[in-house]
Image: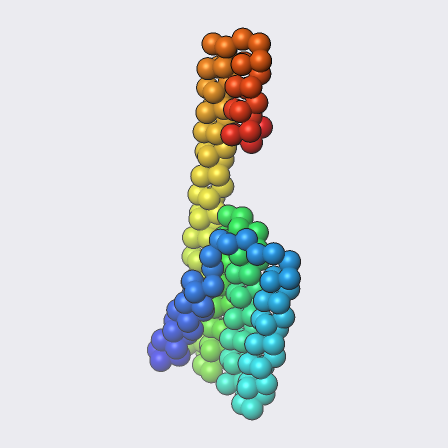
Length: 182
């Protein structure tokens, strides 16, 4: 069971890394490219540290390094675009990374104990991906609802413009279009 505790700790560590970097601020091109290069350099450094190990410890280290790289890249994409779909992708990538680490940790076991470990790791991944999917659906629903509210507010503003005539009405409609992005 000690390996599963370590595995769960890896999931938490990957999650903390994701939470620390995942903010929905749009990045410009040069900042995005510089961050991408830093992620690559961090991965290369972590990989070199893993090369000092041997056997399954090296495999676990490699999986952790690769997982951190993928999570950081997904977070970067989310910070770059700010889209809810990319936020959900971060959760899915995090689940995949944790699963890859868990699979490597299960390699230290044999027989039924290894099979159970692998099944538990897979079940955890499936649950995490399901949660990410629900999160993505909720984000999409919120975005759609916000769009519907904006459309309704626009129609109301245009309807209020009907009280005017001539240039006043045109100015009112143009102001509504500008305000609601139409």
